Length: 132
Image (tube, rainbow, N blue to C red):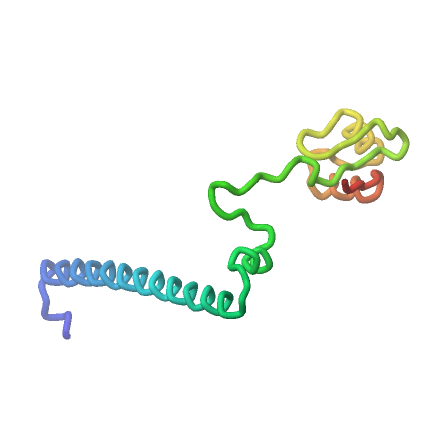
C-alpha cells in the first residue's frame, strides 16, 4: 500500500487499525503460549505417572527450593549463616542491621560499614562463618 497518497486522517486510521491488530495478535499469542504450557505440563505429568512416580516427588527434584502455592512454609531464621567474632564468641551477626561492635571493628581495619563489598570482605576475613 502506498502511504504517500493518504491523508493525515487516513494515516491515523491505519495506525489505529495496526495497533488494534497488534493487540489482537498479542492476545492470541498469550493464549497460544498458555495452551502450549498446559499441554506440555500434561505431557510431563503423564511421563512421570507412566514411570510410576508421584508428581510431587519428582517436582521436588525439578524445583527443589522454590516455594509452591500459598501453603508453602517459610524458611526459619536458622537457615542463615551466622558470623561469630573469633575474639569474642558472644558477638554474633546473622543478618540485618549491623551491630555496633561490627561497625567499630570494620572501621578499625579501614573498611566502610556502608559498603556491601567491604561488609563481605570483613565477614570473609575477620569473622568465623557458622552454619547450623
